Image (cartoon, rainbow, N blue to C red; front, side):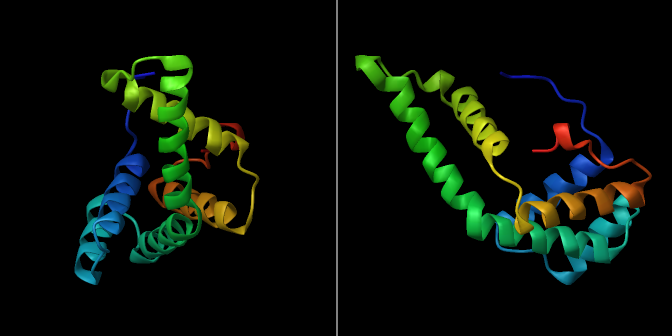
Length: 133
């Protein structure tokens, strides 16, 4: 793992929204400031915020707990010594496998569509289905 990624404008905005939603929410004035900073409408920021929050509450938090448990079990199976320095990469690999295996549903579609709406306002094409996770 440990792959270097070139962050695009949409990724930076989505990361900012995600950080805010995980730390208690995105007040209207911060939403407005983010929209202005990234050159998008408040509506697409709000749409993504709502889609992400709904997904996290119904799927994401449970999946992260399950991934943490599976990662620790896999890293210690057969009496192996747990290596904390490998944990972050192993956890990310577990989460990626879980995302790839997740069937599309209303929540994942809305999250994808909300991301694509941000990308459209920035002037980027939708994320190809094979690249979306």
